[in-house]
Length: 235
Ligand SMILES: *Cc1c(COP(=O)(O)O)cnc(C)c1O
View 1: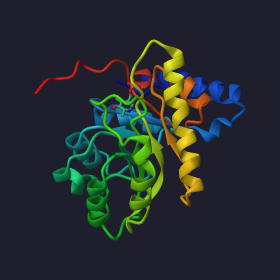
View 2: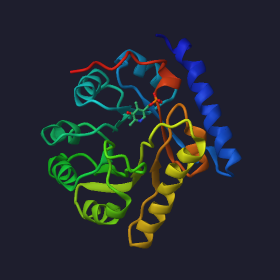
View 3: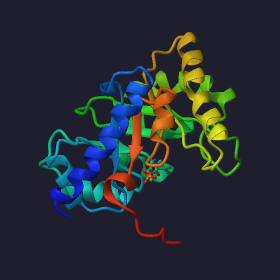
View 4: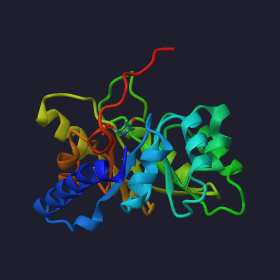
């Protein structure tokens, strides 16, 4: 892959973001594009970086470690860890990531805070909310969000920035909209409870317009930038 091949895709995604923001009466700069680079290599990331892209999202710790190492000389590149995080992998992430989006248990946040190297700025984090109510989905139930958010915000080496959600995929636009709409309502509730959150991480390649209409400040886009990913391997 060369920059020439990724540039049109990035331009197209930026145009979608700008259009959706305008339609919602929002400034395009109020929505950040997070390039989800999972399964794609360091060369593709470097190509997007050369086009001005600075924020990249990874789901798997091993990939974060490898790409972080390979792209060390890209000093202002920001790594967002957006996948589920196991207890025994927190140190690898605390030492490398700028952001972690999917905090859904206090123990993970506590470990990240303890393991965040003192020379790095506080790790920016979001609490993941289960907006679909599916038992299989990760994320904390909306009713438990305030307690978790307050506990996370008290940790010294983390800065709680907001909420993240992955809605249940559905062809039913109204159902999807209901899930997206839950997040800003909850954010307001948490802020009324004394927190100062400014980030809503929601929306992907297929539904970023709807997410922006409901207040997304970060859209996490993979396929529309890099193309289709190879099918998931089963362990
Ligand atoms: C893979 C992934 C994305 C990107 O999805 P696309 O449909 O490829 O844009 C966004 N968020 C999370 C949490 C992901 O795992």
